[in-house]
Every structure is written in structure tokens, then in C-alpha cells.
Length: 136
Ligand SMILES: [Mg+2]
Image: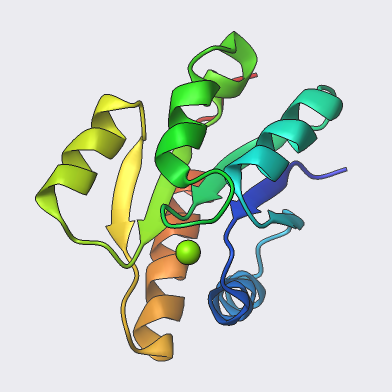
């Protein structure tokens, strides 16, 4: 079975665009979507044997936002090895700095136009799911 991509995103429209990007890129990894950092931690802790190649992380979410998720992720060796790409509409310098300080592996701004958004997803797939070596 293919490893999954964990998508932590509260916006349904963004999820649709991201899924379109996965279809277009013919990416075999199934997407598991959760709506906030808390749900993501529950999933990661409750399913330690599920292989995960990449985490796509929104920042602005109810219950537990992306920064708090990054902070909690550091406490687990297993979870902190999974690459995290922050995908957000925020382009604030403080957010970018904080995300990297908390261990994000990349920070990408969501384009406004859906077409550009799909292209960004294709680039992320090419690098993180095809080119980059994954930890075991
Ligand atoms: Mg959001």
C-alpha cells in the first residue's frame, strides 16, 4: 500500500483544489484529510503504523492551529521526521520565521487563483513526493 499524505486543512475549497492537483499529478499517495492540528495529532498517535510521506499544513485553523501542531510535533521523534510543508494564505514575515523555527520543512503561500494553486501543488508533489528521499 502506498504511503499517505496527511492534509491538515479546514477550508473545503482549498481541499478540493489540492485533491485536483493530486489527480493531475497522478500521485499514487492517498490523501488523509483532517481539519485541525488536534485531529492530526490524534490520527498520528492512533495510527503509528501508517506510512506518511508528507504533511501539508494550513496555519489558520480552529481548535489547534498550524503553529501549535508544529510545536507538538517536535515532541515525537517519529512524527518530527515526517516532512511538513506549510501551505497558507499568510505571507507575514513573522509567520514564515515562526514556522521555520518550529521545524517546518518548507513554507508556501497559497495562490489566489485555483489554476496557479494547482500548479503549486504539482511543484510540491514533484519535489517532496518524487525527488526528495523520505525517512523510514
Ligand atoms: Mg485555514
